[in-house]
Amino acid sequence: MSHSKPKRIILDTDPGIDDALAILLALASPEVQLEAVTVTSGNCPMDQGVINALSVLELAGAGHVPVAAGVPVPLIQPLLIAAETHGTTGLGYAKLPPPQQRPTDQHAVDLLIERIMAAPGEITLVAVAPLTNIAMAIRREPRIIQAVHEVIIMGGALLFQGNTTPVAEFNTYVDPHAAYMVYHSGMPMTLVPLDVTYQCIFRQADVDRLLKIDSPITRFIADSTKFYMEFHDEYQDIEGCVINDPVALALAFMPDLVETRRLHITVDIHSEVSLGNTIGDFYKAWQKPPNMQAALKVQPRRFLDLFVERMEQLALHQN
Ligand code: BDR
Ligand code: CA
Image (cartoon, rainbow, N blue to C red; front, side, top):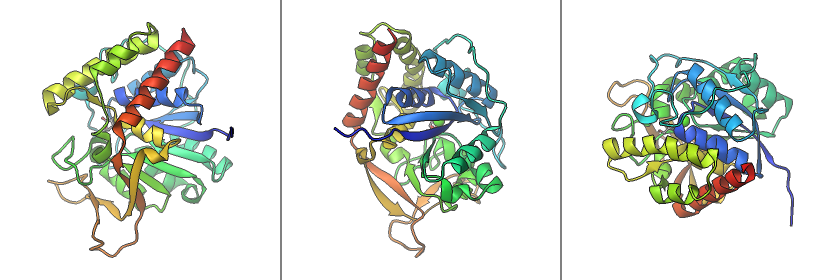
């Protein structure tokens, strides 16, 4: 049996119910080592997101993982948050104790740059929020483009409808200009759009299975996703909830969960009606080289089984 070194990851996030689940999946997965969590605004305002990140880490006994606050507003657009999707605190009906730890004094953008430059080729960045922090980091220290191992981005909707406007996905819509900068930066990137995440629906049966283990972690997952499921039922007629961000996290250690295609992908930053639309040039009409690979097919059951099993292990480990 081979024991390769865990992949070193930094999670850039706006926690957020599915962001919290991505944090838990990272902590439950021995294939990765969560080195830091960087936060921006999105699902909730950044200050609240920082508290949520710290509380979720502490829930899983990982209060040692540094959390850094980043850029609190999008580059150009006014801030849009998603209280109807994630609740006013960002974590649905879940109530976690206030965190014991504090965020780092270091700004998230500086932390990203320092960690990536200190270990060229080693850090995988999993970005599951508006790309504001990443865009700022690129501008401030462009050498991270070569130094980062890989960037896995949850965002966009290619051949799938948007979840925020008819054509735009939330993370891309909140900061389309940051997304544009990152997409055209030249970093090695994998995009995880709604095309695949909307196949990964976490249902009440999964919650019931988890609740067979009585623990703060399983109760947190049940309470937070209850709100998220109500949102999906009311606004999207979906039974269950789409857990986007853990799909991106899982790809850091299980890339064959998805089928990818190399494409030239851009973001509409000009038009009002389709602002934040992510456009993939499937037929090479623009004759531009691919700038990333995009996940277009996923094995949903395999992902959901992985997710539920890992949450069970985390909960049992804690009890
Ligand atoms: C993305 O937007 C947020 O609501 C989720 O946390 C996820 O990162 C899905 O569009
Ligand atoms: Ca998110």
